[in-house]
Length: 115
Length: 117
View 1 (cartoon, chains in turn brown, cyan):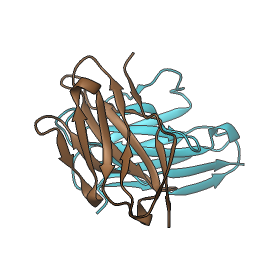
View 2 (view 1 turned 180 degrees about the horizontal axis):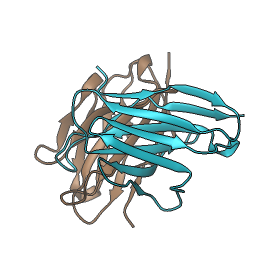
View 3 (view 1 turned 90 degrees about the vertical axis):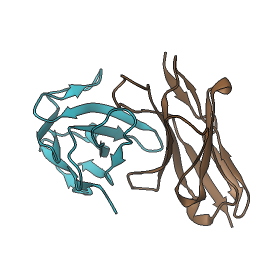
View 4 (view 1 turned 90 degrees about the horizontal axis):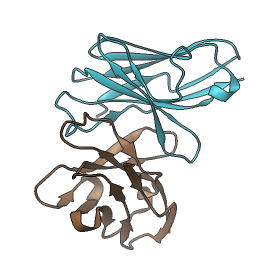
């Protein structure tokens, strides 16, 4: 079955430290890949997306993500975390061409930032 | 700025009443909108796909008579929770995307916190 896995439920990092949030997907073909961030009581904000081309994509707020086909992964990274980055992060997938744009979400990773 | 507006952001009502939530795309026409439900500390669960001018497509296990969806225009979809009960209390989020298929990201509203007493 098609699925999106975020192995880490919670991650805590110190402010200024680097961050990597993991995301793996299980689809037959390369899907469209997204990372969203959700602050408490809020909707979701798009951080970045990958459709094709350069496998390293840049997003807002200093985030980047790298698509690795061989590992079926799309991990989110940030070189230096700020306290305001504390939030819930969701990896999401659309099956790809011909699949409409119905998103499948991972279970999310809660990021805490220690000052 | 926000491209999808959701209203109300918070509603409390008595058991048995019906509650309507609106989702508007502000600067583009959305032929498709989506409605999600999110339980505390969980991911988003897709409830239904709202299609302008036609019936919504509901996910398995979602009661269409309980959660009425109307997408009467290209910028507005509504979700009505009919005869709401405490178990319907949740965070409901809508999203919309520009036409163009799967490579158009979904833009999300800020959600509606529904509490049924």
